[in-house]
Amino acid sequence: MDILGDGPEMPRLREMVTCLDVPDGVCLHGWIPHEQLQGHLTRCHLFGFPSVREFGGGVVLEAMALGLVPIVVDYAGPGELVTADTGYKVPMGRREEIVRGFRDVLQAICAEPEQLRARGERARNRVMTLFTWEQKAAQIGEVYEWVLGHRTARPDFGIN
Image (cartoon, rainbow, N blue to C red):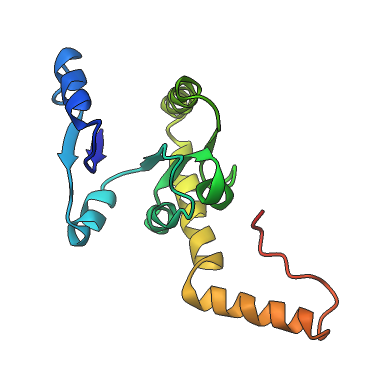
């Protein structure tokens, strides 16, 4: 497991890795320069993002664009970007409920790891279909067509 990033939990994570005696199974990379991040992510299958303070979710889209399967808290932007076909959403709750939800998802993935490849492909396809700049421009065009009365149906881009 690779954990990228740094923050106030890093000392506790280092202590846990030592106490659990899993130094070969967990790599705490710390802060990674942005230009090196993609190289690390392309070697991964999952993108765990337990944040409840990130409202936009751009980092989730970046991971999905690389074919990673996201695990997010079903809250704000990340919860709206991920579907049941493209990743996993853990219900919002107290800290211990979120931790339990992530653990349950990871256990389910370990029981059926073969599902990750297809989910990763669908995650990448979702980003390429809905969230590139070109697609956003086309969506705006569809909204204008609807507002001007040139189409009867309200545009539906598959986003809640």
